[in-house]
Length: 68
View (cartoon, rainbow, N blue to C red):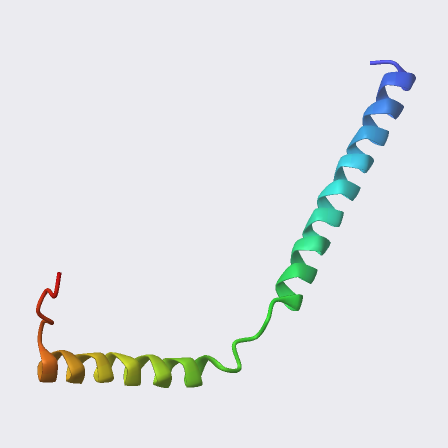
C-alpha cells in the first residue's frame, strides 16, 4: 500500500466516523426533543371512563333496532 492510498484510507475513515457521530448526535437530539407524555395519566383515565360509559350504554340500550 502506498503512502497516498494509506492517507486516502485514513481520510475516508475519518469522514465515515464523522458521519456516524453526526447521525448519533442527531438521533440523540430527536430523542431528547420528543414530547414527554405529561398528559398520559389523564388520557388513561378518560379512556377508562369512555369504555365504562360505552359498556353502560350498551347494557342499557342493547342493540338498536334497524329502522330502514
